[in-house]
Length: 202
Image (cartoon, rainbow, N blue to C red):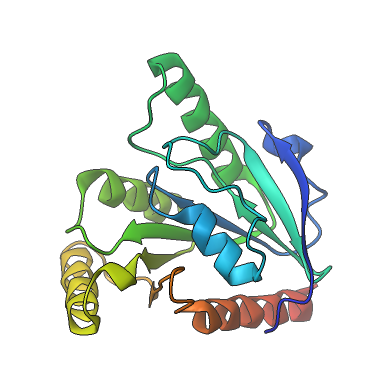
């Protein structure tokens, strides 16, 4: 898939106010400061589509981007660490949960993991919640440029083994680097395959 057009559509705190659920939709989420905005900009080929920041917790709403006039890329607030109040954090968690559990055209959620870290409880718990709710997801490892290629692969395999301890089937995984523009094509190909299935079942 080639991204010919990518544009911001809207931001909402309520999934019911998001665009009409008639086209396939893919959500991107991860712990704060995992490199989500940089990844989205790399995938779409637009350097400033998603606003990047050194400040964790920059994304605070459900942000919709319209890609190739045929599908939506959704930028969700991060989970885990962010310098916000408990009340604010609970509000975000409800907003994210309502979206993930109720958005009928959500095809797949991409969970972003910083490849430099071993499996963290906050990530494992989030993915366990997706699995229990039957929400399909893939894992995207970010910041692979911070490691040597063999180290990145070893980190991914260690993560796969960790998940295999509790999961019957481990979700698909991708290694990416927004800095080096790596991992873009496999993710877009996965989305394209889903889009074609969506068209056939309409």
